[in-house]
Image (cartoon, rainbow, N blue to C red; front, side, top):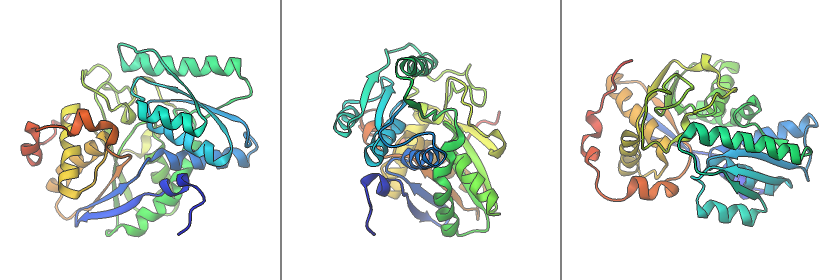
Length: 312
């Protein structure tokens, strides 16, 4: 298959059957599909056109997607990023022609996210011609997942899709679930959250090591469709780390912390629901998590199949 741009290639996941009970939908960078769908719809309704500046806040994966797709589609791009944006990403932004500013280091995720959104609004006052992509607030980001939903449905070996996905901005899980509802595909959605996220009320539970902001939020997100989730699992950093390492060790898939949370939940659910088939999203690769997650020995590696959640 011939692709027009590397963003087009990266937007399409590999749907991998790793066992009789589990399928992994593995992305190079999941938000690329979201950005492509949003830009195409915004162009269709006349809100934006090539040459415009697209701006948003991101802790990493969405920023990369917006810079890459802007490069493909002929847009200028400005990113307000968190301190988790590393030198590798910054170098790619520069090469792709995107401008970048890093928000000051804050004492909490809430302050970091709120400060970045505030800075985007300040940028728009100075550059009123720019378009804020509103990844946290606009359900236009659902649209890019419709084709992926069809691919997952076509590959699903059972009569029902049981999806396990990080909640985050809500776009990926809602985009998939809405498409399945439209096409009468039976499905369930299990959402995964980090501690400290306001999205499902765990803001008073602290996890000092949390670096999985992408599946939770410390500020209110407007595009989460709470109706689609059948249940929610909260996973702390140490357990997410164990899940990511197990995913690599047991399936060969090198992925990030959110993928580790989803795999950990899937391992538990397949144990308690034998015969059911689950599908998890693996949103990105494990490269930027290497030092925090993959280096050295880790005690939980030997106990991964014994872990069970505490019901709330």
